[in-house]
Length: 82
Image (cartoon, rainbow, N blue to C red; front, top):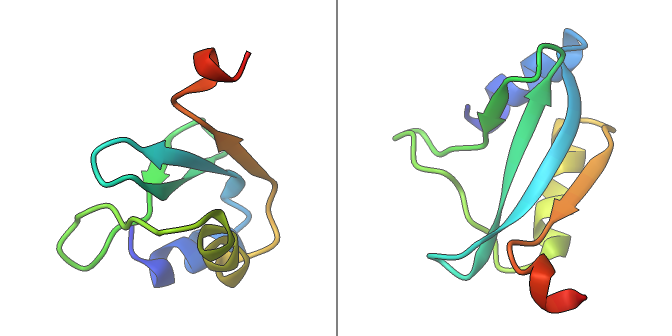
């Protein structure tokens, strides 16, 4: 979903959470919006390619552009953080 589609879904009270995930391939961060039915809606560009951001701050700014929803940050390297 492009940013405008995510905003529209949020305005219809369809988004319950934003999940931020460390993207292993690009070494950046991507965001997926979760709707009320538990479906994942990744933020993509107009070609359908998931957007990747350099920092958590950039991702949080994008999420706040969509709306004020809870943000869950998920690292793929949780096993190393223990």
